[in-house]
Image (cartoon, rainbow, N blue to C red):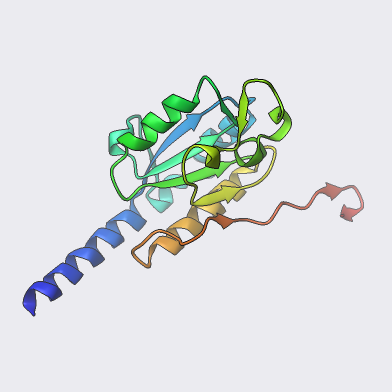
Length: 171
């Protein structure tokens, strides 16, 4: 009986640590660089994503969250799969931008396979071209809230498409 209590207690500690200090790895699989700039903007003092404990990592062996941008190209497919396989379990994948979701403006090109989910499973979609840093932060926080249950989401979480603003208001 006490072994079950100990196991549950350790699971709670693991979940707490995973939610409060996720380490992220950023991978560009062939985008125009717009989403990459917005992801890096979230690390600046203006947006300060580190207040949520998120730290950008350089090695897949230390990362909990893989943040992907761009469509999957034939050239990057094997590297993306290798990076995903090197990450320790449990691992989570966040796709940022329209190109990573569906291929975006590169869809139909001779060397583009499509979105990230064609190669690896995805846990969170953040739409936009490029999405604002606020949307990226909101999406990652939504994923962390879902992880508080102690397991991966059953289906990918998708944020609503952002509304376009015009001079007279929103359309």
